[in-house]
Every structure is written in structure tokens, then in C-alpha cells.
Length: 129
Image (cartoon, rainbow, N blue to C red; front, side, top):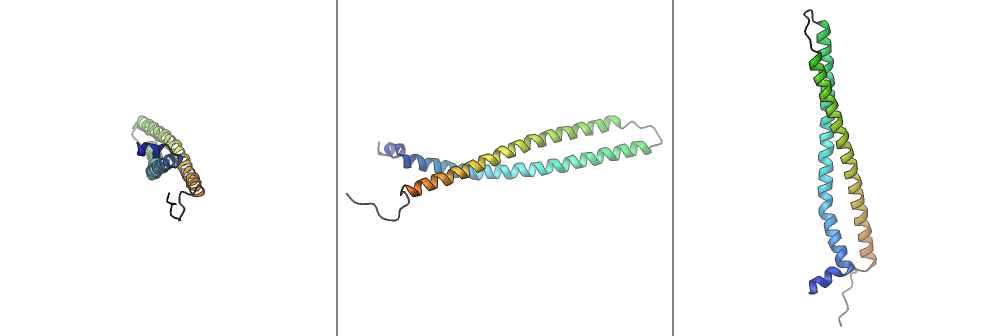
């Protein structure tokens, strides 16, 4: 029952919230880094698709034999469109993660300031009854 009383106090709730924030912050930062690297890969893939499509068009123009590469170029352009779509989704997710990370940091700082001003981190020993 004593543990329950500690959780119900504001400082107990703040400690739990602070612990949760500290637990989530590294995961959010790691996820943000992974999203960033995937976005870079998507941009590189899109550039390769563009180069390949241009090369196929160039080859098609210079061929003496009528070789129909248009379906392949269309498939590449469709793949490029999907890559751009995924990149936009990742960009939106990364922006949400950035805002979440910012809010976590802001809330952590607010709670730390609140705890410091309430005397929870005071260096003097507690008074004995």
C-alpha cells in the first residue's frame, strides 16, 4: 500500500513520466536515423531509375532494328513514381518523428525544471521527525 501512495504523489507520477520519456527518446532518435537513411537510399534509387530510363530511351533511338523498349521505360517510370511516393510517406513520418522527439525533449526539460524547483533534487538531508 505504501508503494501505491508513492505513485499517487505528483513527484511519483513525474518520476514515472520522466522514466518513460527517457525510455522512448532513444528509440525515437534511432527510428529517425533509420528513416533518414532510407530516404537517402530512396533518392539514390530514384536517380538510378532516371538514369536507366534515359539510357533505355537513348538506346532505343539509336537502334537500327526496331526494338520496342517503351514498355520497359514505362515500367521504370512507374517504379520511379512508387519510389517517390514511398519517399513522401517517409518524409512525413520523419517530420512526425522530429516533432515527437522535440516534444519529448521539451517535456523532459519542463519536468526536470519542475522537479528542481519543487526541491526534489535538493542536496540537504531530509529532516527527521
